[in-house]
Image (cartoon, rainbow, N blue to C red; front, side, top):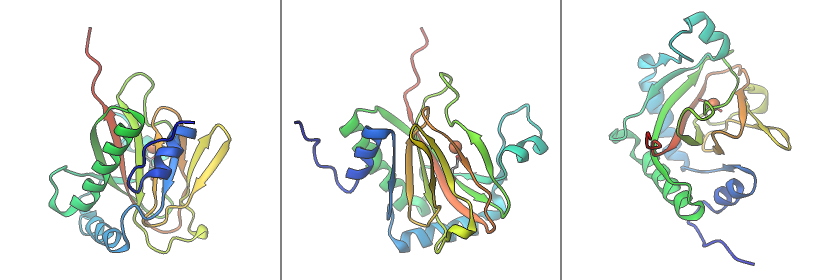
Length: 203
Ligand SMILES: O=C(O)CCC(=O)C(=O)O
Ligand SMILES: [Fe+2]
């Protein structure tokens, strides 16, 4: 039996991705770091834009599919360095352990007002983009099941509900799992990110 090389802190993520394509990491950042990110998200909340699903879709249609507001993060953002460094560690680990060839990261804050949801979807439009791995980090402290807002991941073994509890990171292969965000009865804060492979060369 061959053993995978030991990886720092992300063993479960590597194993989960290798074995079934998705994984959870509790305590991806420590409590103080999560609080600081939640505070940053709230501080910038007024500059979030309603998330669109495509250029042709009007706002009413958008809201019937997804109701979150987003703010893209700049990789040089000095206030998000703890997050970005930890994600860079994860990227390096996945490349080293699973040869995923992840080249870039794009990520945004998301805020789902009470009642908002995101209908079942796939993050990668098959064959059309290079999103390889989705990551979502939750920022609400003290999230309870009765608040709703679960991420429902449609796995081969059936749906799995992830509680959007502050500090939890969910990681999954972008082209493999449809998923949806269930409505919550309180504001739900997160950071969503996508690791991309390099664009395929145009032949
Ligand atoms: O916030 C989540 O749990 C998932 C968000 C999502 O599916 C997305 O932004 O594509
Ligand atoms: Fe998604």
